[in-house]
Structures are given as structure tokens and as C-alpha cells.
Length: 80
View 1 (cartoon, rainbow, N blue to C red):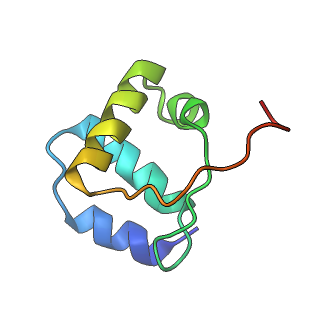
View 2: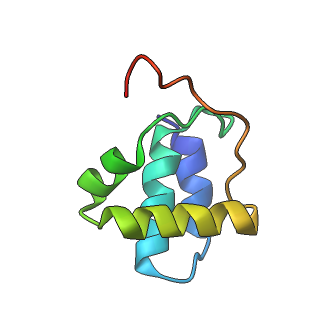
């Protein structure tokens, strides 16, 4: 949990309450330097009470806008 990253995101505008809610959830899961966000889209949808489709769309938008950076894929062969 990173209070530092949450504090930075809290002061920024993201264009909608939905986008803000997702970015704050991701910031909460990040390490102190903003890296290492390991949570599934299903988990984000469950905790934010948003639809999975909305979470996927917003994360795709964040990646396109450079708000999030994909640095690699986790091996999911053992965990589904």
C-alpha cells in the first residue's frame, strides 16, 4: 500500500469519478515507488463495484494515455 502514490493521485484530475475510483484503487495497491501493481481486473471490479467491462476499458485507456505502463506479464499458467 502506498500512501505517497495515493496522495499524488488524489490531487490529480482524471476526467470522471469512475476513472478516479480505479486509479485510486490501483494507487492503493502500488508499492511506494508506484510500481508493482498486482491485482486482477476482476478484483478491481469487485472492490470498486464497477462492471468488469468498465474496468477493462478504463485500464486500456490508462495504458494508451501513459497513465499506466505495462512492464511485463505475470505467468498465469498455474493460477488461471
